[in-house]
Amino acid sequence: MPVIDHRRRRLGTAAGAALLTLTVAGCSGLGRTAVGPVTYTTERDAVIMVNSPSVRGCHRLAPAGAKEVSNGTLIDIILYRTRDCTGPGTTYLATKLSDVNGAHALPWRSFSTVH
Image (cartoon, rainbow, N blue to C red; front, top):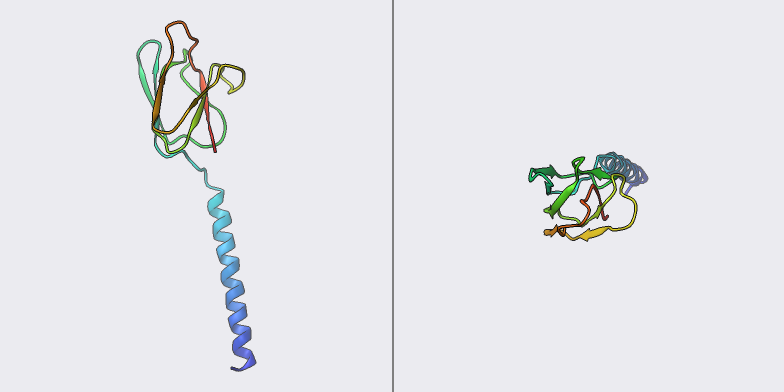
């Protein structure tokens, strides 16, 4: 095989690898989501559904909080009693499960994802 064909092949391979790298880097910048809904019930029995929340950051629930939460996403979540996803009294809620607060428990006010 001539030397020119080897150079063209290597140049084509390098160009393809560079394009693939740029494509993957561009897609990784897109916001990843927890596919599926997080559904919760407020103290006033309003049912709220958050569809495919971002896997990053803290997600606030309704101002009054939630007494029941169902995790219909494909990843686990952590429920918090505070509005900023901090503090004690957290609840780990695995995918496809629900949790209900006791009668005298404080409501959940935020959640974050486990990723």
